[in-house]
Amino acid sequence: TIGGATFLSDDAGVGSVRQNADFALYHAKETGRGGFVRYWAGLRSNMTRRMGAIRDLSAALREDRIEAHYQPIFRLDTREIVGLEALCRMRIGNNMVSAASFHEATADAQVATSLTARMMSLVAAD
Image (cartoon, rainbow, N blue to C red):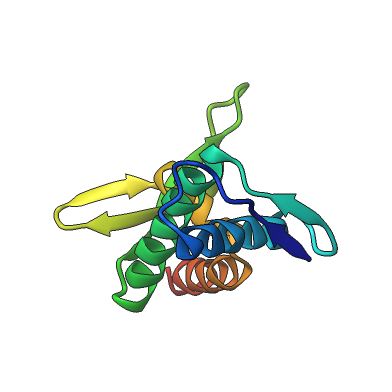
């Protein structure tokens, strides 16, 4: 798996090119091993956002700020509740945020595995 970058006119120096290559390598590993990804201008912001989401979700897992919220599943013909859907929520201060706000973090296999284990544990305990 290879990530590559070339020197661009707006790069600050060798360190910037190396960092761009690292972003490309990380992206290459996420999208499929054994390939090559060349750095492009939008990759840095995408990766920075994704890495922030991974950092935030990892912290929430360490700090027990992941919660399971339940949504009933109804039969339309009888309106009988026939099950529940467990929805993952992350607590940030006094607010709860839905999984849509941190779903990018689940591209990281370790974070996704930890999140799944936490949700399974919460649901089983409930």
